[in-house]
Image (cartoon, rainbow, N blue to C red; front, side):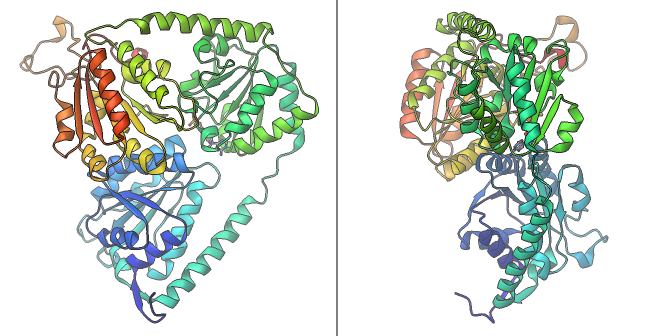
Length: 573
Ligand code: ADP
């Protein structure tokens, strides 16, 4: 315990304020001037996960925010470290996940002179930061930290930025002054939050209007997304679906809030559900490209959208029939309360429910025929079926699935089942590749009760493959399954007339070294590697690695011509 008169510097004050605010994990890459911030944070009881590259650490911090509901913290050095950290910050912004990027910055006294790693970082982060703070002296450190942490989670979650000038890190205050600064900052930020909360009561009439539209619908549907998952709205959504009998459609990361195996799941009848529904309750999901903008021809012209979103601007942008601004868990709870007073339920024999259920069953049976075949050399279906069964075999708590790649993610979305909330992390709103290893590491520390299984293409894996060393160093229960089809989309798909010019003998821009030994990479660090080419080898690698719960890479050799170029996104390429 420090004496009250003991002097502490900016590094210690930052660590103390973070720990005091409930921060338990940080991700990052240390160096000038923030190494001491990290070591002091560890002394304060915070687990610091040290990465090789800020991009992966940032992806980890953003997904940690999604999984825990607390801001994920990314620590970087100044200049280039901050620039690399923008990958994570932008990922938090686009997916609306809470995160704080903390970067060291050059000495304020040398500003504009071309100092070491000098950059106007406050301007650089602007497009992706909800709120940024730069303490200009040590006395402003606690309030700056509390504000960024608070703003990252309040309203629509997102990324915030904290700039730490080198000179502020070296200033000192007494331990007594530090305690005083922290408690005054807490009081101030609490008041600021109370003021911004004051206008948030939703009129009951809006909820009643939503229920009455759903009650009057012939073909109602509920769609929910990762905003509902973030809000932990699973119990309320399940109650809504089961009391009304309305079919549901999760977005990719909404999968698992209600089990994919539920009889009212419309996932396998997606086109029918969205093409023919007349009233849709959309909870925590944007009507963006992933939901075809809510427009024809995928949706009917006169479909009535009822949007539930914590962000008023999002609702205004979409001009829905009705918008309910608020937290998904609370709003769906209010909807359930109104329904309870005057219940309605479609029932299994309702023509709409029957139509969805029949279509879903037909489509599932058709896919099962594909899945049942043992195709060697592997296509995408055979290994995905084996992996699906292995994951389901784990039971509860279900593993977190991390999924990225073109065909690997597209086919995997249909084949792999989610039975529990927040157990799927994928390329998300931007379709970002290279998120996999960062997400695996975040999931392992955020959900220590769960195994983490990544199913990713060789291209996605390659973005941050060096982070397998991080997985081994911290002995995390992460199994990375690499679908190795020799490159981006697999194989050289160029027509002969495209293969011209002086560099025509170079490998195609889409190709990597054939049958690369990715499993050997992890063995360099003491992890376990498997090379598999057929169902028996894959089953045995999964049995062994799932039981061991230790870092492993399973290198699955896939026929390079099995997938499609751009996966299911050819129309955008
Ligand atoms: P998906 O990719 O699953 O379709 P999106 O990322 O497009 O989901 O949409 C998530 C939406 O959820 C965002 O518009 C965001 O504002 C909203 N959101 C975030 N947190 C909450 C919450 N607690 N309650 C309701 N909506 C939320």
